[in-house]
Image 1 (cartoon, rainbow over the protein chains, first blue to last red):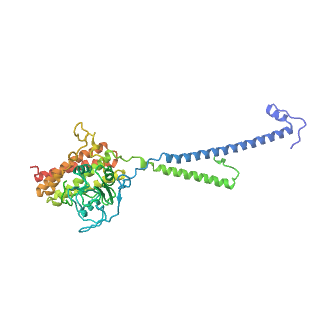
Image 2 (cartoon, chains in turn purple, blue):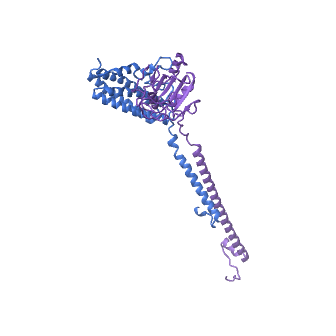
Image 3 (cartoon, one colour):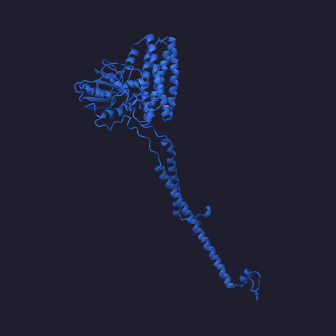
Length: 237
Length: 227
């Protein structure tokens, strides 16, 4: 440090003059203040940048959460389940379900259900339609395999009016209607592996059974025909 | 201010917390994007409903095709005419394929194969058939068969019992009428349907069955059936 000149210099510039006017002590103090201000500025800057990072973090977090929530809230309805037409009649009260084989055989077959809901059967299927005589099980079972519903009735327990009421509810194809000897219920509806025993033609489960099982995926060959094979005796239409 | 990250090296747990938070955010974002990416595929086109024209067409046309297959197989077995035999083979296999496809539409739409009222879906179309004027009564089986150009049980029996030229001519007569009933149904679906594939199939049915009518009429002329 150069010794302070005994005679202070002067300056025309007021700013320079004011510096010259300060004492050494004052100058040191000023430097200290400047350093302090600089430090505080740094500190504030750091605090600000920290704050910015917090804001960014929170915004990103909110954005991600919002995206997840939106992806759940705005998800489209799942496609409808296959409930009604899939051969799932589990909601039908009194429905009986079985397991059956499906081999082509010659001759007569002992069936486990009455009337049968499936099992080994003749290579020739029964043509669908209205029959006024009992039809052979072995051919009718093959029609069930093709998705038909076999509506059987006890002729002693069902009046002709009731039979007409039953017939009116049937679709025009893939149905066999026939009398059956030895039924333990006035009317029995049979589809492949599924059966429903009912007392009268006005039972609303008839519609439910047809909705669930008529040409349903529950049958092994639901797209095969129900015509062009055997017309058993007693076929009306 | 990308370099404004904490300048003192963060303590261990803070760094791991930061990495964890970033990883969690990325995973969350990926999860959401994954879900969003499935939106269009499953829900964009709502499946036709139980009372839709598409479902009615899929059901009624299966019944209709079923009878065409039955008649074609009947004549295939006994005709002596090679042109009728190959045409019958063509019709039976084509319509079996279409029947199977229509079956699957209902399966995929989650609908039963059996509907409420046959042909109800066609009412109110240009091609729909008028029945009973002011009457809202559902059509009888016979009326529906007639509307769809289908053969009656008596006509089917006659086809089964006929032989030779008589059988060929009866087949052509019944099948021309049958196709004539299918075309308005197919056209109605093109007008009312929503499922793109169903509309496409209906349009092609309408076209090919019209060609087949022409072909059958020329066979009728060759065989001298009309008499």
